[in-house]
Length: 280
Length: 156
Image (cartoon, chains in turn purple, brown):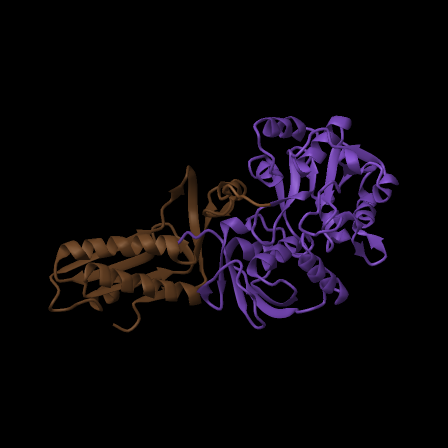
């Protein structure tokens, strides 16, 4: 039995680097806050906005159900803890309000692949391979661990996930979780939205060996991809095929030489993901 | 010597491989043969299947052999590896080294087989007595390794 899912949008940040309230920035006709709530709606029975005490009456936030932080100066982790204190028997689908490129398919993947027996389900970042804490499901069982973590003086939710029993998923869309903390990042996200994300696809060939060949059901393929790096490409393929190996267990080769997971993919590249070897 | 490393789909001819290393200036020859064993980690193994990403494996093997020659100063070194289906007892990999003296021949031979096992993109599928099969190093370790790599990470 999995706990019913409630939604929480983290909109209590101070937006210092942006210089303007991130929740109020617009994505088309909606504010980022409204957009996050709209994305959550199909998946949760109730959705809340996480706020600090002084934000309660702000017009942008006043129209939604709120959960006020119960602890000060802890950053986003305070919002998650406050929500768990309010409804301890619910699992929380937590979203930051500054993910302008987040799409419905990414959230569907998260909810669909949720592992209720673990403490949380989250994506592995397409940029650095680490868990993304602010687009994740936190199970009721995580509340004791989170409270202990904060009691030990720690506040970083990413490090919390790194040391916990967490289900990690590859991102279906490598830019979905790009967060926009500065005006420059926001502008970059807006231009990505303007070209419909259709910008810059490249044609690459992928050759599969051993376990990956069996799981892909083919020895090779040529594909058009928006992936910019081998890491993003593996994330895309891991969504299509039932791969059991994590990128962390593989090496990558580009054009018949060992390569880097974050190298820029170019048109015409031949990519091979190398499972753990066993020659000799 | 023309090709210091090659893959073979047919049984290896050790006499021919050895003959290619002959050199009047060499007083020592060392070789290693890797054979298909009938058991692994408690399971009875019936046969093996080797698969390789040959383009990259050949390049990497040539680098390993060049490293061994430079490090140990041996005269000649070569390696051959099977791909495809192999039965128990068959020769899967052969390494041979010839040198002026035995010590560097032994050491270079050991270096080459150790590096070959760790660095070449070659995979081994074991077929067990009960009918099961599995890719060595890929099946049982699928989940836990992911968590071992994480490091402490500061971010804003």
